[in-house]
Amino acid sequence: MHCKLKHTLASRGQGYFFFLFICLFIVLLSFPCISRARIYIDINAPSFQKFQIAIPEFGSLTGQNQCGDFGANLLSVVSSDLDFSGLFSIIDKKAYLVGQAAGLSAENINYKDWSAIGAELLLLGTYACSGGTLEIEARLFDVFSGQQVLGKRVSGNRDHYRYLIHRLSNEIVQKLTGYPGIFLTKLSFISDTSGNKEVYISDYDGYNVKQITRDRSIILLPRLSPDRKRITYTSYKEGEPILYLRNLESGSVKRLSGGGPGMNTGGSWAPDGDNLAVTISKKGNPDIYIIGLDGGITDRLTTYDGIDISPTYSPDGNRIAFVSDRSGAPQIYILGMGSGKTSRLTYNMKYCTSPSWSSLNRIAFAGIDGGRLDIFTIDANGGQAVRCTNGQGKNEDPCWSPDGRYIVFSSNRSGRYNLYIMNANGQNQKRIKALSGNQTSPSWAQ
Image (tube, rainbow, N blue to C red; front, top):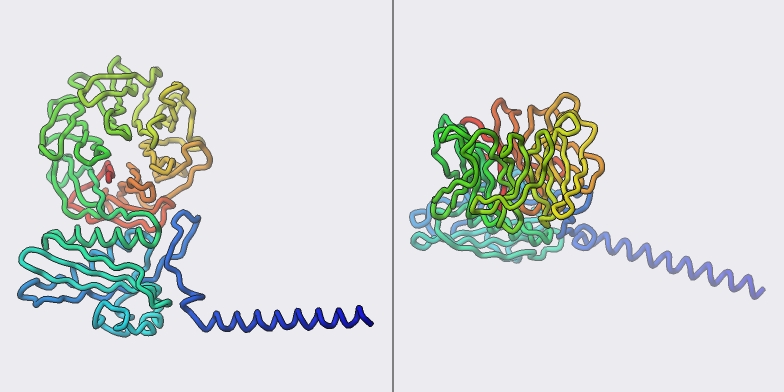
């Protein structure tokens, strides 16, 4: 009898707690801000769901006669930035139930109008002008909780509105991921838009293009220094391949190596910016050397009786990846700077070239597999290569973003070679703003 009563009480207790659990679950479901809010994204996860974000046109706080109509321009830039990041899905403005918001404060927002179209985030902005100065204020809201996630005000020269918006976009990505965005970084590349292969520099998205060289010759492999103040490249303007160093602030140019027959290419910057790994045919055979910024050779890294080219430094500067044909076909190898030990990294492909070592210790390269030239990545310590492009023209010259989360590369999928950016896993491939002609050999710096 005692045992039966004890069992009955226990059963009633379990039923009571189960009833409380069901009630609590129903209550939680009645609060979408608790059950559905998502204000952080783990970009290190194998896969993630993009944020659904609504961005109405920024409102003007001053008359158009004083400031002009910047609203559409600001919207275009911030939308492009967030789309390029691969972290956001921009909701089409045709789906919006309301137009421009009445203000930036949470009290003026009817969140149901935005949650009804699937928005998780809402970005509102205003702008004002005073003389030549443009001030932009933006606030980011979590639609489901009704809370402000970020508030930011930036100001500067009105002609530099793209730069101001890039700053804002960086703040948004930093807030939601814990990592800064790529929107203030710079690209260098080769373009033949002038009729000759010359060096150009642009913003990460291809805007604000500036021509750097006017050699009217063939130029190869521009490489921006880590501090973005200098650039190296190989030019044939004197008839032979010569490696040059150019100061981007003063415009001064000096010869680093070359002046004779054979290769003088590479110019891979050491992480500290004090040395360069280059390919030089000093003794008739292309080998990899370390040179200082005065052009003096400080070390010879390879002595193989074949071709060793395309060096790229590891993030800590202790190793170099390079291309060698010592196995019979071009493959990627790793060399320890201190030990001199060399190991092969890539297998199962007929041709591998143009390695680029990321700050997150992954190597991107161009390889031929299945008869197509595509971009692959591989862990620097070995493993299976991951294909990032597939079946869309020839894809070459990969280079990592400074944060190691994006790759810029050259592809002729549109008929001529243009630059494209993709996430490290190959997703979200987008062409940057293109010049006329072809663009190749990108280099990416902070």
